Each structure stands twice: as structure tokens, then as C-alpha cells.
Length: 211
Length: 227
Image (cartoon, rainbow over all chains, first blue to last red; front, side, top):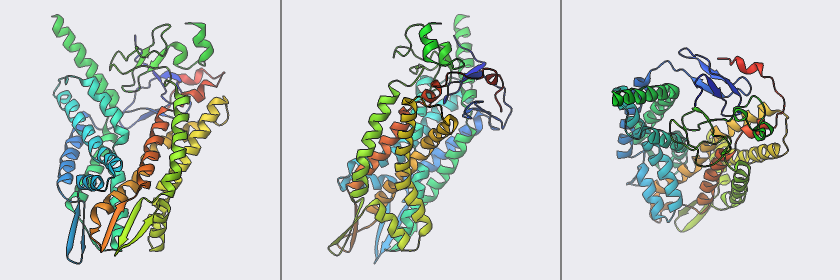
């Protein structure tokens, strides 16, 4: 059924041999230069550590204001979900839904699904529904925009500075760390290795079942 | 191997061998004979639907690009932010928001906002239209550059959400009653829609269609991928 030594480029469909990579190397398509594979320095447990770290800071970030504003004795605070609520109050549900999905649901789905997938994998077990959740992670990935939100906070700061006193909150620093940890998570993740482990475990289980 | 396949896909491509790579897990799997792009075929490893090429790529991408072009007008004309100070309301569009940053001395941020909110969405639409036309004309011109352009379009898309986050944060924070209140304007809905629709358009475009136009190619090069 399958040809493990061959790979088709996802951008130009050229069929080519999959090279054996050493740590730190990446394979690119000979024709169009698309990245076909990567062998990061870090094993799965590093990725898992970044995921758990990002999940922790993401939860903290959601509990505290990102920015607070003070003007003539009145303080206002903005948490991520508070912004969604404010947009809802302004009858801007469509925009609120977009912020809710890209800022909250998508990153949380990524972090929770990876925890669910990688934690048992690291312990030599296969989480039920592994393939489905991995596909969920793949389809949600492009919609997580913590880094865009961070840039938005910086721009807001400058705009607010002309109106009142803007104060950075714990949420801002937590999301900043989340952003860095999620970048490290993506960079350290070896999807080919994750699937290799998946197949090994699945076949191991089948043999056990037969015995 | 059917003749249909040989005529449709260039030699050297995985599709010509009846092989499809799974978009979710990357597995190279053999498509069953005859049922090439049916929805029934799933990846043997992860159950994701398998296709030799993204289904209806050209029509779908055109539909989304045209939708985005239409939405682009209200996104830039309607206000994204409404600032009310002591009864007087000031409407800010995407462009005037960037101009405000420029005029108040934050030219660096003004450039970032201008690029993310105005240049990127427009450049994305122009790039996708160029790519679509090149596929339909079966162009062989600068195919590597075009593939690179596609990858750039995919990466850069989400940064246009910047202004949505800025408007959302300002509308949340600046609530000082009649003294000073900021609300998001209807332009934000159109603008958010442009960003989402163009992201879907980029996802539905299949860059492999550009390479299908290439009739002859060097097989030997496939043997030595550089790492």
C-alpha cells in the first residue's frame, strides 16, 4: 500500500526519495524548494514540555488583564475574554467570534490536543482517537494567532498612550511567554517521528492482540 | 496505470503513479484504480480524505477571491473604530487608523499597520489572481517563483488580523462614558471577513496544478534531494 522511502512534494507533487536526516537537518524538494521534512534536535519530550509550559502560561494569561487603562481616576481592564464580551455588548458578535476563535479556542485546542496526543505517546501508549485529534490539531493550527494578538497589544499601547495611562498586565507577559513557547513547540515538533511512533505502537498492539 | 492518468499528470509526479500524499499526516498512499478523487478514499493511517489534487481547487479559489475582493471595499471604506468624545463622534477607517499613528510620531508602528492591514490583503488577492490565471493559461513561466509566492501568501495571511485585535482591545478598554468611548465599527466585520475568506482562498488553491502544466521534466533530479 505505502512507500515509506518515497515522498511527494506537497507543493509540486514531484515524487522523490526521502533522504535520511540527521539532527538539525531539513529536506527540501529538489524542484521547488518546499520543506519536505525536518529532524529537529529535540525529541518528543521537549515538544511536550513546551506544550505544557504554553498551556500553563496561556491559562494564567486568560485569568489576568492584558492591558489596564487609567483616566481621571477610572480604571478599565481588558482580558482576552473580556474583549470578546465587550464586542458582544457592542453588537459586534462576528468580530467577537473571530477574536474568540483565533485568540482563545484555536490556541487552546492546539495545546490540549497535543497534550492529549503526546503525553501518552511519551509513556509508550496510544491515546484513543489519536488520528482524529492529530487531524484536528492540523486543521486548527493556521487559525491560532497569539503572536498577532501580541502585536495588536503593542499597537494598542501606542494608541492608548495618547488618551490615558496604559498599564501592562500579567496577562500580557503570560501571553508573551505563551507565544514564545508555542513557537518553540512548532520548531521542535517532528511530525514524521510522531507518526513513526504511532505506527510502531499500533502494530505492537496488533501483535499483542493476536498473541 | 491507466492512460487517463498519464495524460492528466506529468511523469515524475506522484499523481501519475496513482500516489497521493495525505494532507494531514504526510503518508504517501496509493489511490485505488478508477476512483481517483472520490470522497470515499481515506488515508490508511489517519483516515483523512485523500485526493490527488485539492477538489475543485480553481473554482473554489476563484469564488473565495471574488468574495474577498467585494468585501475589501466596505472593509476599507466603513469605519473600524468610532471614537466618541463629549458627544462628538470620530470615525476611523483602517487607513485613517494607520495615518493617526503616523501623525502622532509612531511611524514605525504606522508602517507595520499599513503593511499588515492594507498592503498584505491587497497583495494577497493580486497574488492569488495571478496564480489562478497562470494555472488556467497553463503557464510554464517562472514556476518556481510562483510556488514561492504561494508559500508567502500562506504564511503572511494571518497578520492582517492585527487591526481586528487593536479595535477589539481599544473598544474594551476605552469606556469612560461620555468623556471618551471607543466602539468597533461595521468596517471591522467586513475586514475580518476579508482576512478569513482570503485565508480560505489560499488554503483551497493547489500549487501542484501549476506544476501539472510542465510536460517534460528531468527524472534524474528526483533521485538526489538536497538536505
